[in-house]
Image 1 (cartoon, rainbow, N blue to C red):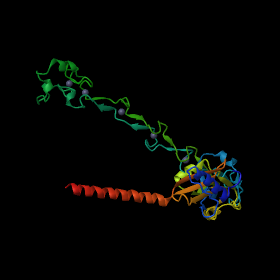
Image 2: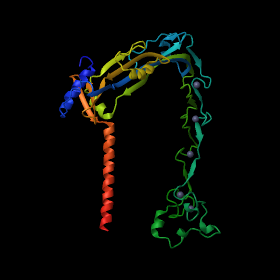
Image 3: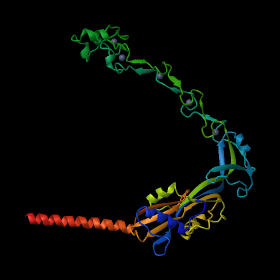
Length: 371
Ligand SMILES: [Zn+2]
Ligand SMILES: [Zn+2]
Ligand SMILES: [Zn+2]
Ligand SMILES: [Zn+2]
Ligand SMILES: [Zn+2]
């Protein structure tokens, strides 16, 4: 509807609606119906809140890009336009005039330091030999000489090795090797051949390996300055814009919300300035709810408030006292919805409870009579 319907037009719409339920009465005549306005409200506001400040900056290397940033002398006086859309957040980074400088790193020499892991040697000590994994570097290395090179027969002690006795199987004997120490065949560990130890695979008997921390270069990159040996320092000024949302909604019961949501001809007003006025036809109760939410916030530089309201007439028809009728404007005319009154819903619940009590009593009486 192009304009807001009057109370009389709302009553006429309800009259036509109840007529279809068989109730014929002139609702515009005095004493036939009561009309109260309980309009619906959907108010949202988004503000752009600005914060400004300064902070000391220190970044590794030569930051040539910092010199390209805009400069200022007083961050409070620097002019930044508020965002066209208050919903958008943004951050402007500035450099205070005369603060941009480059300083040498005091904790390294040209971006590197001596490697602590190898104390600047570039290599680490490593044993030339390692114990044989097959015989654990022990006496099992050779059943004849135990890896000493002196055969058992020339030693005073008897063999401690059960494998060396005549009961040993030929299969086990075949797996043994000739000892490189005592030269006896088929008695030595096949891996170390009686030597107990093997050449170290890591250093290949050299006695040292390359330091894995500095890969042999003796120096390591200084992480703090990222190996540049210098820092760029400046005072950064910032101007941030952050959206802040608020709302106030009076949308009635869920069934009413569904009925009015798409069909209702909501009146929409958009306010972009703190001085913009609320619409004249806004109900006082809604005006009281919305007004405090329009106050200017600290740091506010832009706003967009959207106020939607839908006039809603609640009609009590005296000839049909158990239902509430709701009339509201739609794009094509006036829509009417109805539901039982609260009192009616309570009354039905009471009757149902009373009926249940009567049934219970009857059951008790019948059981008593049957005894
Ligand atoms: Zn450094
Ligand atoms: Zn041996
Ligand atoms: Zn071995
Ligand atoms: Zn080694
Ligand atoms: Zn090193």
